[in-house]
Length: 552
Image 1: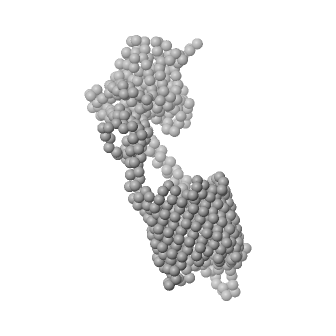
Image 2: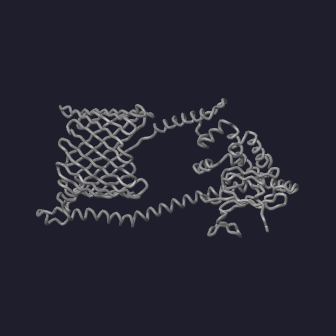
Image 3: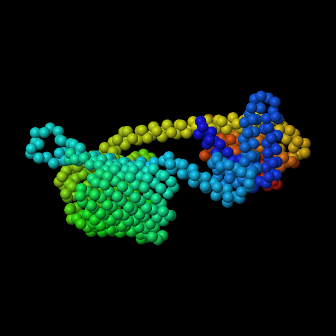
């Protein structure tokens, strides 16, 4: 309920509450405030029920006047709305310029961001479980008597990291991984701190331990508007051997959609790598050429981006063999993606790779189907995952998502109905308080043949039923009668309604959220009938000669 009330308060337009234009002078504000006091001041009402309603309505009017009557709070409200007023800085006696107010607001936002940074971490994880299922397709004579194939987990790796922003410029990261394969376990842990040196550069220092202690330094810098570079050095002690590695990379935007990367690594795995990436809204193409010791290879890949699906194909060839990959990745929920890729080549054989990404957590399941180029492994590895996905999607996922969507829509519908009911009660209470003023105003205007509101209707007039003001196929009105509130805004045979959404005015509410609304006023002026229809946020000024109704 607190969130709901807060959301309703954020929707309040203080200019609409007082029915003044945004450029209103101090005198116009005082005049509007006095008019509202006549209608809603609690001392004007003796009936206990009306007095209670008047207290609630007048508190909103008083708040609107207090905000707009002070040049400082008004400037804050005009720029940042209610959130700016709720930001929490102290309002001092000295009157500040809008530039000073904005500077102070931005400073406060930075301080609040600092506090949020101190409480926030960014966890990332990767779990990989390797499955050996080669016994399904690689049948040897020694296994002829076996009734069931042998499927086992061959390796497992778990990696996790968290980030802890210390200040706006410094971020600490703690990461580690554990792995097991062929009966041998490995693991390491590292901690790093990154500092933003300027808008163009950052530096990072890392220490770690695992197979041996290591220290690393890395840096980044923008070189030009279209290029940047990174570099790093890593020193690790393995037993009695000190290993030193160096890496440098230069990236440049070659065209609107094409980027190029040139990387040089020196050390144990020395190499030179060139990468070109072309990425558009609907596709991504990548070319890689690496010359190195001991691994030299070339890669070409292409990804087609559909609405919620990506289809990928890649080919890699090098001194150790060649691999062909093809696969698909699809979005299964707001924060989750599921992908499957078949890898076929020498010497890897046939491998099915299943990948599930949930926010910042990644789960990989590489399943080795065959150590050879088995057509059966390729066929079943391709079509069984697709078939299983569509069966699960149709029988389980789609019904679940549909049920969740219906539940969410029902919750939103109930929330909107509660808000509308509250606004409707407030408008009805406001109109009830206006009735005496309405009768006096009508009597006064009639005595001088002035401005008398015959009828005023607000809402979706296009869908309004001509007989009962109900929309077609609805059980609730999409148009409301606002004759009394409009008449109470008449002063000296003149009517002005400001250029805000009319549901912010006293005695109004929104009868049809998210629909186009109009205000139709039929009135008499000097005993002649007039009529006008205006858009929701259009200002109203009456009377006008052009509004006359021609009955001929």
